[in-house]
Image (cartoon, rainbow over all chains, first blue to last red; front, side):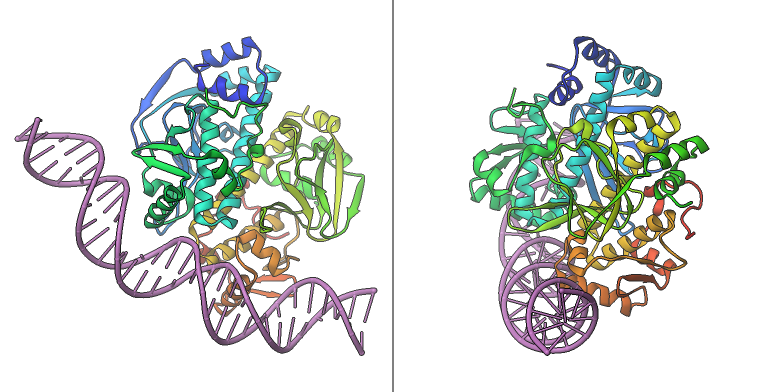
Length: 241
Length: 241
DNA sequence: CGAAGTGTTGAAGCAAATCAATTTTCGTGG
DNA sequence: CCACGAAAATTGATTTGCTTCAACACTTCG
C-alpha cells in the first residue's frame, strides 16, 4: 500500500475498496512545509483537518519557563486535529520536525467520509489509538526509568512505522535531534545522550545518524516491558513491509 | 443540576431539554461497588458503557515490577469506556478508589443517544476533553517539578469537581491516599508526603483528612502555571455551585 | 484492645539535571 | 571542493530532586 492513511487505517479496521479510494481521493492535494515550521498553534481554530503524508511532526506544549514537552509524534498517516471541530480551539501546538508533506482536508469532505460507516469507524479507531498511545507514554514517564522508557519508545515507533511501510526488518529512520528526543521523553539533552549510549552498549539499540537499528527486538521488548496490545492492531501487521 | 453527566456535558455543549431528559433516563438504574473493586480489567470486552455517578475511580496500568500508574481520575459524570466498542478490548484497568455509584448503559442505548446530534456532539466533546487532560498530565509529568505538578492537579480537580457541583468556594473532597496520589503523580509515597507539606507551608494547599482546601487560588494557579483552556469549558462554569 | 492501613520523619543512595567545555557533524557560501 | 560557522553530539564534574530503606506515630475499625 502506498498511501499511509490507507495503510494505517487498514491495520486497525477492514476497509472496503471504495473506502480506500475515497481516502486516496481526499488526500490527493498535498503541500510541503519546512522543518520547525508550525502547522497549527495553540488558540487556532483551523478550518481544515491536517494529515501527515510524509515526514515527522509533533504535538507540543511549551511552559512559561521555556521547557517544552512533546505529547505525540505524528508519523505518516497520522492526523493532527480530527477533533478540533468540536473543541473549538487548539490547546497545543503542532510543529513539523522534519520537512513534511501534508494534506488539508476541508471539514465538509471529512463529513462526507464519515458517511461511510466503516470509514467513520476507522477514523474513530485512529483517534482512540492516539489516546492509548498517550496513556502508554504517561505510564512510561511516570513509572519507567529513562532507559526503559526510551527502549519502549523505540519499540512503539518500530511498529507504528512498519504499519505504514516506513521500517525494514530491524531499522527505521527517526530524524529527531537528541534535544527533540528529550522533549519526547521528558529528559535533558545530556541524559538522552547517555541513555542512548547505554542502550547501544547493552546491544539493544544503535543509532547512526537518523537511523535507528533494533539490534535484538526480543530482548529490547523484554527490557522495556513492551506489550503492543495498546496499539490495537489486527493480526500480525506488526512486521515490516 | 443534580445529575453529574448532565452537569458535565452542559459545561461543554449547550444541551436541549429533551437531551437532558434522555441522559437522565439512561442513567437512572444505578448500582454500587466497593472501594478497590475493579470495574473493568485489561483484556475485557465489556458490553455496557460504564458511567460514574458518585465516587472516585481511576484508569490504571500495573507494570510487571508491580509499579502502578494512574492515567486518569474518573469523577462523577465521567465515562469509563465509551470507546471500547471500537477498540475491541481494554488495554488497561479501571478500578474504584472509593465506594462508587455507577450506571451500566447497554450499547444500544448509547446508539440511541447518539441519534441526537447535540448529544453526539456532547459525548464526543467529553472524550476529547479526557484526551486533553491526559496531554496536560503528560506535560506535568515530563516537565514540571513534583510540587508544581501536584499544585496543577489540585487546580484541575477543583474545576472539574466544581462543574459537577462537588466543590465549594475553596475546597473539595479528594479521598485518595498518599499512595494513590503517588500513582497519579508518578512519585513515591514519601515524596508525595513531603510535597504536600511544602504546599501547605507555602500557604497554597491544605489537606485535612480527605478535604483539599485551596488557600490561595490565584497564587496556586500562578505557581502551577495553570491555564484551564485545555478543559474546554464554555464561559465561566469554572466556579463552584 | 490490638492490628492493619495510613501518614510522618530521618538518613543514605541514586538517577537525572545542570553547568561547562570540547568535539563532531552538517549546511552553506566562497 | 574546501573552509567556515552553526547546530548537534559528547564528555566530565557537580548538584539536586526524588527514591529507598527503616523506623515510628496516628487513626480507624473489627
